[in-house]
Length: 295
Image 1 (cartoon, one colour):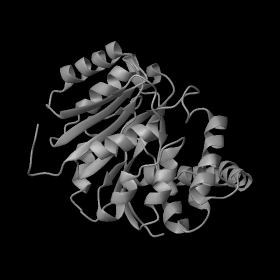
Image 2 (image 1 turned 180 degrees about the horizontal axis):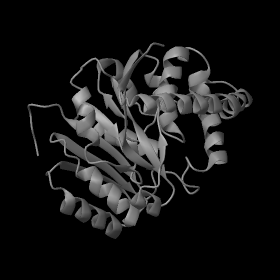
Image 3 (image 1 turned 60 degrees about the vertical axis):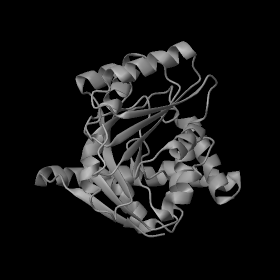
């Protein structure tokens, strides 16, 4: 459904996931976003034409708001970075939002964020998330809360130090980015390779970014040992390689920074966040936090 009076949002979804009980929910809730001026871009890859057509049929069936759907396809597997890069180039939105095909957004994910996007100074809009390791946990609501107020505070305080290298402080799936002149080249040159979202945000944060955080969880992340995020060892190795690539430093120094993040920064962030949530729950506040990141 087109509406030329409001800004357009482009959903960016790379996917090599065929239809399953989990991905059916992800695809359904992603295409049923209740924000009206939206285009849905998906790069289906690493699957047969039959499985591709099944997904397209499923998306069209559940496209109750008649969003524009743009499909890219490859029968071979394409890296998430390459897929996101191609989708961004094909997109037309004033803002883009990343959604992974095995994560489950609330259907008001985009409309909730667009209420804040009326502030044209905002560059990035994040939100808290729930996490689950199997579909049953999601279905019964037995999920863990993941918040980003303390990580974003660390980013605001220590953005010019090693801290943003040692630990990933900005979530990717569910995060909305305004397409501005200062971000245009970075979006058009979205990095390929492993852990490319981490490199992307490092590049993005070279420019000052005004970031908003919605504390209410508007997306649920699927995190288990079969995913890169859930495989802690492999994830940290890729993180170290990403640091080395992004900053052109030795892999030894990158590993040291990664270990510092794992054994020092992440526990500190965890403790501070537990303290913050304790006082937040006692006060009954459910505020939206704004962080101005200056690098």
